[in-house]
Amino acid sequence: MVSQKTANSQSPHLVYHRDRVKEVFRAAQASKHHEEFVNQMKSLRASSEGEEQFREDFIWCLKHVMVVYERTPNVERVIDFAAKFAVEDNAGPQVSDPDFWVMFSKNCCCFILM
Image 1 (spheres, one colour):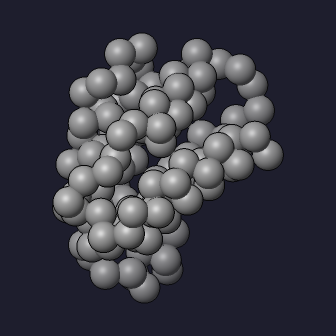
Image 2: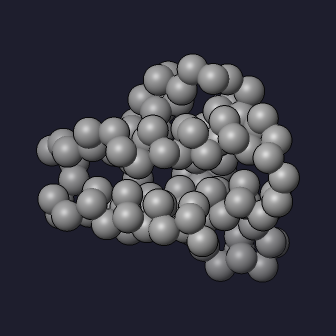
C-alpha cells in the first residue's frame, strides 16, 4: 500500500493511476483467463502520463505479489497474468520508444526470477 506520506508527495493522478493498476492485478488473482485484464492493462498503459511511470506502477504492484513466499493459486495467477502482459505484442503508436517493451519485459522477467 502507498503510505500517506508517499501518497501526499505524488500527484493525485499518479496515485489514482497506480490504484487502477492495482485493481487489475487484484482482478487477475481470481481468474485463469487473463485476456480481458491484459486489455485493461494496455488501456491503462495508453492513458498513463509516461512509459516510465507505467513501468513503475506495474513493477510496484508486481513486487507486492512477490513478497508472498508460498505457491498459492492467487499468486501463480498474478504471475501468469504479468508474464502474459509483459510478452504481449505491445508495439503501438502510444509507445514513443520502441525499446521500451524490450526493457519492460526484461525487467519483469528479471524481477520474477530473483
